[in-house]
Length: 74
Image (tube, rainbow, N blue to C red; front, side, top):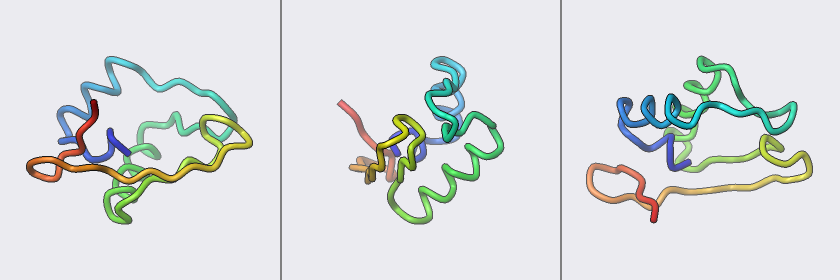
């Protein structure tokens, strides 16, 4: 959710810096699919983890935004 709400250049930097790791068979590792997921997250206003990190996990997240609707983290 945090990454989805960043400007394109920062989102790209984050993905290149940290990589895309597969945790379960549900983890999105394809960059095109991940881009579509980020667009969907921004459109819906929240993110959903459907077993991408932990097979039995199902989580929701919503951004806390700062200036220019950029999500913030601490």
